[in-house]
Length: 232
Image 1 (cartoon, rainbow, N blue to C red):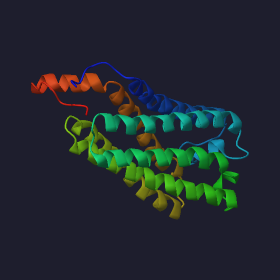
Image 2: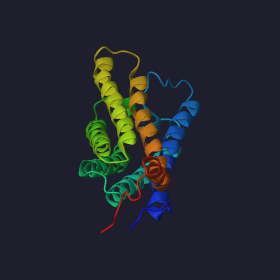
Image 3: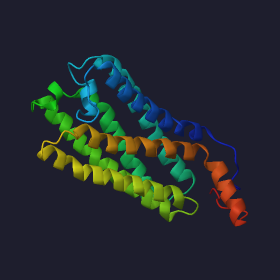
Image 4: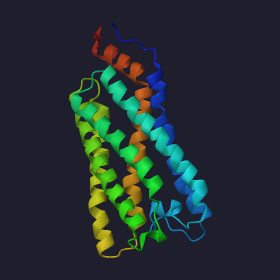
């Protein structure tokens, strides 16, 4: 079957990633504006929706919406990777991403940050444990997806972009314990480098998947190929 430029419904579902990224960034910006005295440099994002935080209940609606949209994006990612026969490593990465977003959606909903995270309560311990799972799964997912895309014909460019984002997240992750151990007032800034890089990647990949038929069709014309993909 020749590859055409017509989109299927999974291409539209993939747009949930771009919407999710915008929803997440909106909740961070809005939370900072509503919380008088809040510092995006010093304070973590989780504090915005933590127990006792001003406007936490309203902001949790945003994070719930984000979580659902992110899960939908991860599912669409896996389905489209299979459809376009992207390397199996990338498909494994998509499953890791789905695991991460599911753990984040359920875990953070059950265990919001308490007292700014300053006291190691059971809730805060679980919040930190979930964060560890989310970070490891995120890094693993991005490296797997990036490498798998790089190995796949017509996907090398987005693969390189994914790997660059993965490296930035790792570097920010290395900086996090340094900031915390030396009690430097940059915990929020370092976290935002990590989280916003993930949101940027999600936004870009989401639009890329939505435009994928046209992108590959342009690549085919550029290379002078007649057919790049056959369905069994």
